[in-house]
Image 1 (cartoon, rainbow, N blue to C red):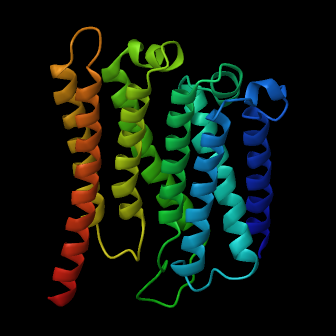
Image 2: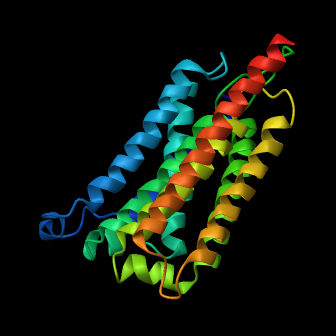
Length: 270
């Protein structure tokens, strides 16, 4: 490892510690954890995110990512998951320690876990593939970092637009009313946005087709959200409407994944 990589490793470890301290629930009294699945849901989101990152490093990363570099990207990934995932959703208004731990809010835990997993999916996708598939140049940490920031920024923008259209009653519904229906809809929206973004930042870089299609998917997700918000009653949509909305998000993400695979096969055959 060169000096810049050692510096990034130290910085990643420091940011991971910051994420741990900001979101720490271990100091809470054990009574907060009794009959409270919320912290477990959040930890499951972290485990799934890190498991995905490890799987990409094991099977699909650039051939140069071996030995100490596997550890390097795992530390970077954990910092990303804790800071860009868990901490940022806290800044949005749903905090792990307060809402999930102290207030025992399971719907809040579901949204936090979904944002964590969506962040991990995108970072794992940025590690997928060769940095220079047609040349002999070796890549560097800045390549996956740049692609991650591009994909994650798009995720954050889409979620910000989602929250803006929902209005203040959404966060109030999650934090005060503990609306599992609203939490499930937001969680599916986040994961449905993360799937095409992961696909866009993953793989060898051959062109901009995946990227352009991804922004079309995000527009489609927001259009679906707008349509369902238009049907909603002033007090908020019925649970049935939100279930259909969540299914529409998941269906669009699945459809685009199939279309991307089909295009790859078609262009490859051509």
